[in-house]
Length: 443
Ligand code: SF4
Ligand code: SF4
Image 1 (spheres, protein in one colour):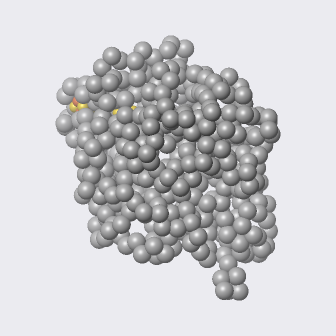
Image 2: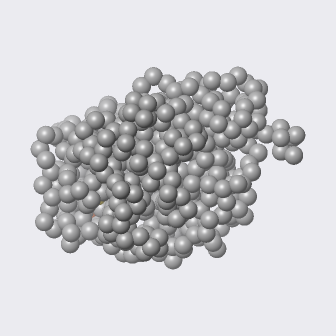
Image 3: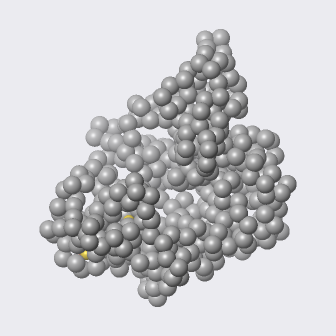
């Protein structure tokens, strides 16, 4: 299979990045790479989705990687996993999983899953500010994305299932593989997950994830975890902060100690981002210092500056998030041709995972999960027409579909089609397609 054929296959299978913003994966298949990084670093605490996928499906992940290497004539792939994951999977640094696929161990620090930190840690290369990994000769895919590539190549299977961790303040953490579009409320009912009084549900990790309404949210192609956490945990408190009061606090309480910049993993990697300066100029700088504000787009959103660095209770991340939103609306981002110069302090300032869990107030909820199902039956799914540019429905209201049938076309530009994740009857709704099994199908 050549590059164009694999691209076409991946697009038609609806493959998007399974571990991040849902970027269509075919678009990363560009010439110039000499290394494929399979990101199994599982950056955030309490998430064990990639660990479980690798435990159960490692040969398929290796096959997916081999398909990419062959199609692009890339000589090597590195399976990037943290030391603690490697110990649990009994894998060793440098171990060959296939002639061109090797295990690469990462330190147990946060945020090792950040693409730019991952590239530096595994290859010693840096990406210029605003550049793409391919400019450093690297393609990065999440482990589940590579698994989905293998399923598309081997079995012509579309992306209709999602692996995710359900964890946090519940008796038993579990990993499940369920249909895309499954309502979170149905998922919790199926696995007897209850939400204690005074707790919230987070889609994603404790630091970078978002609080969701479990009565309205559904599993998407990018859902890596659903965490039930008490509102009192620092990880949740930082999400409940009012952005306006964050700015006020930043302007009045910041002593300019620079600790947020000293510990920022992107700054340590040599990127020109200085959260203490963005905090100092929280209100006034948008008009005065465009270069400074643009540097906000170099932030990976890890939250270290807010949850562990600042001793004044300030959230530089909240201030930076505000800048990023304004810049995204104007399609502005920081670009530079200067290669970052990695700080000699970096290796001494990286944040150990245990320390990070404690800072977020989630260490006591960290449990190794059990795998609880890839055969669960759900009667209803709501499949979003995204992520990315939403396509048009490819089915009529009331149509009957089988699992794997195309239900939405890809749109112009970066987009993939969507497929039915269960068989049933279609209802078209704003921004999504609902599929429900009829009574006879349930029986
Ligand atoms: S969230 Fe804070 S520490 Fe993390 S990359 Fe952004 S500015 Fe740096
Ligand atoms: S760590 Fe806090 S007090 Fe220090 S410069 Fe950053 S925002 Fe200001």
